[in-house]
Length: 407
Image (cartoon, rainbow, N blue to C red; front, side):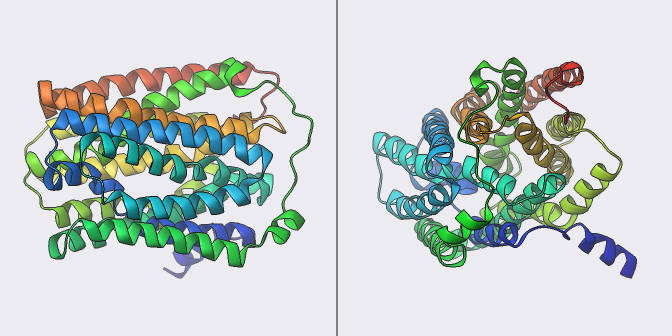
């Protein structure tokens, strides 16, 4: 038992103080992010919108995320990641507080677009911060630690959120989400001063090397893989909660508990798993491939049985795919980015997730509305098999590339 504990702790050694501080801020931010996993339920139950209307509102969520990550990536390359992170947390938090006061369809579309635009400019900045504060051999583990903080917060948030909905109302979620974002911004401002950043971080060279991301054919293939994979993944945060409620009759607190399982498994197992995969020298691209495979399995098992326990199996399979695929796909994106363009490359990488929100929620809601849940899960599975094949193609092309040594 002591050896297991020692091996677990060893996965966290060697990471910089700044990475730990950013992880703490990220945890505080994500612990309050209770609105997102319950947003589709809020729009249906509290606001009375139809599934197609919810799909369009969630598409505005994706458009805001797309614009925010693009602008965030560009700003990161110009004014630096520190200012982008602080402003994103502060303004996004204030936006979440105001979102609860919007009632009609069009105001909610505009409001959600604006709030997510502000909040998701955080994404490329935090990845570049990981690169700046990490030794090359620690980048994947630094990203995994940030993800651990995200998932530790996210595992706590839905449980508390479900209890708050059951015991108080949806409005309290918006207040808590907004306040925690503002607190995270203030904490970062006080514990990681701009002077400290300018002293410690490795500055990006003024001369940009290599191609911009939208002219890099291999990176565009990787981007396509990430978009398609993310479209499937985000179903777990819009269509899947509705499936739990409508097909298996779970209450909000039980749905929160299922989402807690995802975060708890990541907190316990992701760092040791990443450390083990690095020790056996699994390439970043092949780790991404296996992440896609496990995500595909998480959908197809839902059609095997109507037993409610199958939801646990699906959640575990999805979580394994996330633990294997996400840290390594992040690291792969960074390794493909030339010097001086990391913000732009990570901005485009983050935009893949944003695009998935534009396409995924709307298509998922309409698929369910037209064909039902079972057919929707089969479509997801078939699409992910295609994505897995594209990932193998990318692996072969990267092995032949003379400019990319880490793939």
